[in-house]
Amino acid sequence: MEKYWNIFTASFSDYGGYLWREILNPHWGNYFYWLLGLSLFFWLLEIVAPWRQHQARIRQDFWLDGFYMFFNFFLFSLIGFNAISNIGVQAFNDFLALFGIQNLVAFKVQSWPVWAQLLTLFIVRDFIQWNVHRLLHRSPFLWKIHKVHHSVQQMGFAAHLRFHWGETIVYRVLEYIPLAMIGFGIQDFFLVHIFATSIGHFNHSNFRLPLGPLKYVFNNPQMHIWHHAKHMPRKYGANYGISLSLWDYLFATAYMPEDGRDIELGFNEVEKYPNSFLQQQWYPFKEKNSGENVTEPELHAAETDLNDQEKSGLDGAISV
Ligand SMILES: [Zn+2]
Ligand SMILES: [Zn+2]
Image (cartoon, rainbow, N blue to C red):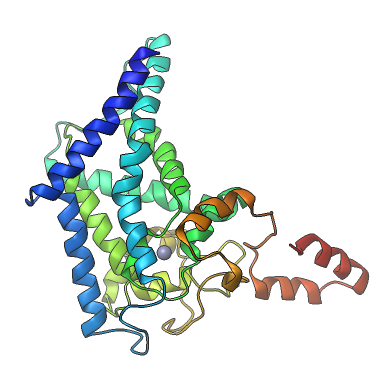
């Protein structure tokens, strides 16, 4: 037990020291300044060449999302996730050791060139995350957590990192085993993280950049805005891509019926959703199951198919 406690306390001081050193020492491999620089870059693009020109440069929830950005990228790690995950990994390794398993590596890629390993990690992780994202939309409880991200009503780059801390846990836990099965020979995946963060900022930015045929490979604002559409004809949504749009085209979950520049964003009754950081953290745990991930047009379509008696039953089932 003492071993776990030592890992727990060391994680806080290690990560706190790490973050402090990052802030004090600007250098090319520095996450703090990369996040700041990327954010300023995409904000500048939104100011100089906005897709929705009527949208304020400091849009609705701009500062809230700015706080989310630093909370999810840094503070959540600082105040807990780093400690919890270090213990989780240690406990998991100890559990495997009971069966004489030293590690989970099934695919050894450590002899590959560094670029090939980075590319492999980027593609494999993105595919896992595409699947996790679909799950967030399909599971009623996970959807409540993921709704924080979908509560954005005006889109801009900083909305990228507006999500509940529970998502970090879901993603990291579910991607841990598949990634541990690949024996990477490098420790530093900085480039992959920064590249994925750049595409994430880009997807959410108020900026139009036609990618030509590359749109079938990379996610982009014109595609991702439809993922945030308030009215979606498909029950569990579409365009789940994180960095790559490729998976949505391969698995027929792509949806871009027209130019989505001015579509309404959010979900049914998004205007009633809490709009402060602390309330949004707490809300998924107290919100009742309401079938809200079933979008409005679909419910109306379902209602018209039913006779009055059945209809009243359906109304009862979906009322909050
Ligand atoms: Zn989503
Ligand atoms: Zn999004």
